Length: 167
Image (tube, rainbow, N blue to C red; front, side):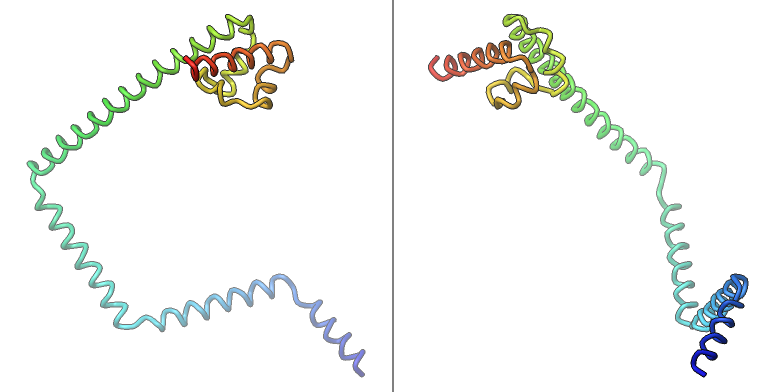
């Protein structure tokens, strides 16, 4: 009897089509929407009215702003923007100048050691002359893969560090 009951239930489940499922889901959604509409209270209606009052007051506040206020605000904003642009230009120029000088210094070092072919690797890794003294052996190996040139550069840096400390 249990087996027959199961087969009957399985047969009923198979008869349910996707359309039946969709129709049932749509009915659920309609019932929920109807419940939501019934839940709207006078308090909700009052809230909507309050929002409209606030909008009207804001519109009146906007109308009260005079052209003089607009001009004053615009001039102040333009002054702030101009000052900011001048600061950004000055900082950019300083950065550009120091980058060019530092890059020229690094190029000079590499030229002096006959290693100018490695300048691209230094640029790619954004390594400057001032960074040389803090590079580790692994860093030098990435920048200068060949042992001879790498050791010459490391010796130059070591010599520079000792001059800086004792000089």
